[in-house]
Length: 150
Image (cartoon, rainbow, N blue to C red):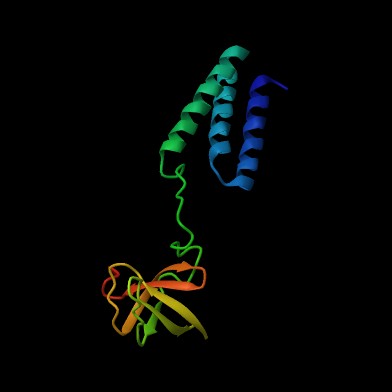
């Protein structure tokens, strides 16, 4: 097997492994190995093939890391609608209990069960429709629908 065949075989294996991981980093390394294969096809020595592969893999990995695809968003699961489907849903609060020095709370029927509801900062404790902003355990943090910005 010639050098260029080995480089392209390794690139293919990396692309197949990338399909299992879904992170794009193995794809960047596969680009580097394909560049090593192109260097081998052009007649470069083994040392230059490795240098070309390493440099291009490093540059493409760095470019991926700087792009929007390489940045991981560390969202708080209690506020992420992708994790908790209740976030963004509306519910009706009939009356609020105000405790001195604490946030306004209420008990409401939501999804067939009674839930503790707490008013988010910036909300107004009046009866009406509220949007779920966050879920903390079995407590729903809500804000007025008109103050939610949607």
